[in-house]
Length: 223
Image 1 (spheres, one colour):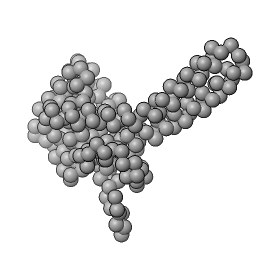
Image 2: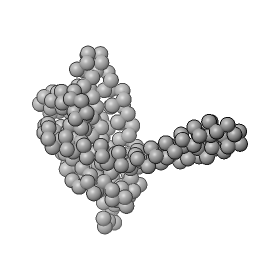
Image 3: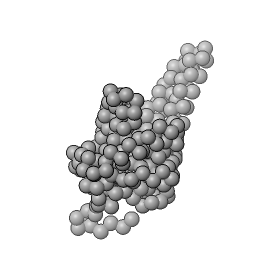
Image 4: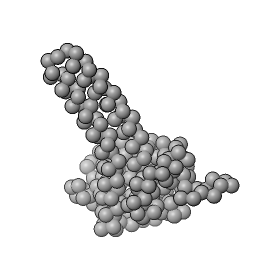
């Protein structure tokens, strides 16, 4: 994993500002804009997967990027749904116990709700990684079905857990710390740094997938 390249490759493109500002402006569109920005970033992921690490910054293609970003959102929604249901059940149990008026039942509901909530939390952590791998596999294969090939998803996650962890950390750094710094340069600066953060995260995502997908020395893998 070349962490530094993920942050620097953007500026190696002579048209980097135009390629960043257009998706940044698109992200101003309510709801739809975020899909476009995400889909644009995932095109950088595909460029890295295809071996273009140094020249991965893509041009904006509104329609195609919108569709790709929407599909990525659907994938993450499906993956996160079971954890959300478990957390909802846990909250319902605790709420029921708190309003039951029966001390024994209250304690029981708190214990059961806490256990279900813990399972939901642990499942959410797993899903965070699985969702990232699933989106990368979808981008690499160009197939929605590839995001739900659970055998392959687990194999890719197990083989390169370290790189996938770096992707999560990189996402937190790029989108949680760097992106908000744009507020210093007024509102539009936030959207520019957000687009840059997406570009960084997307590059790391492609690198991690390549690490996970590379054949093991001396072993022929059958998918």
